[in-house]
Length: 415
Image (cartoon, helix red, strand yellow):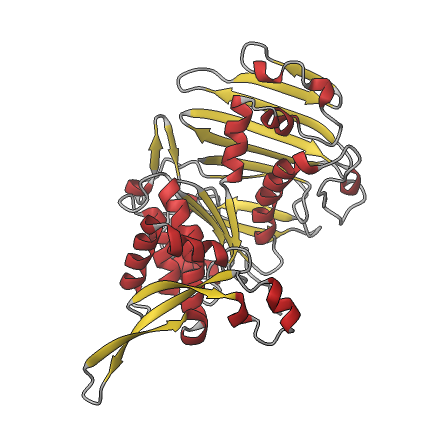
């Protein structure tokens, strides 16, 4: 599970900022807090802010950390890393980007991070804290110098000189089957990120879930029925590629004649003139359903995969094309301990102010982004926010109304 994420010098984020999933000592929606021994973690965190304030960049920072780590194995010794520092001052362009994450895996708290630029990893570190014990250093890296713990990280011994300057040491050790390294890499591999604006990349995953995985299918179908989306059931149908590509030249069709694709079908009642159901027919989702319903279906694969397996799901612009009640229902899936039994977490950005209500979210789950005078992104949570009177936000405030009226910043300044 994600505990917190710290990042610096990435896109619009100039100075060090931390996004936390640690529950504060407040008494709102306590039943939704996920208890893991002495660690209390949040199932949902949401980020609000004006357009171009940096909401998406906060999400992108975590996704980029994941991608740099997972793609490290693919780099040749002269390959370039994905490096986009803060560009609006002369110093930051020459400084490394820094990422650090704290995660909880099977009761052990790991703290892993690295500093890098386009050509090299400057620093890299890994710590672990077993339950009830102090934190131990597993390895430290500074340039070409390594300190590896023989007692706590023997899997890394002897592999230091095999690590190119642009390769992450954790990635190399995991490739060589290091147990702890594989554990941490596995968490990043299961961290899924999707766009609320574009279903490209995860729609096929959803189709495969409906076609093959009955648990995910049943969970999603129950949710759809609760939402009253207008169809009875969801079916999958294998279609030949020829059906999709009938206009293509015959020579091309010969090469793909035996290939198939999965299509999602929704079933609807057919009525007679007396409004009685006479039969049920199946229709292609893309032809029959609204854009909002299609998005709900397409996102259901990653959503229920995260819930079933207890994983982190990141969604940018969750509310795009969705009615506010549907967005709220997705949040409730993760907030409901009866549905979220594995400790799944949802991190998303939105403009839907209907969620700014302490009936649905706690103050420590609501975060804001805002640009400062040098156009760098600031990130702060509602539970930490202090007004001009120096006092924190009380739990009886009308959060939505206060936000719209600019009490917490993070809104457009419209002249």
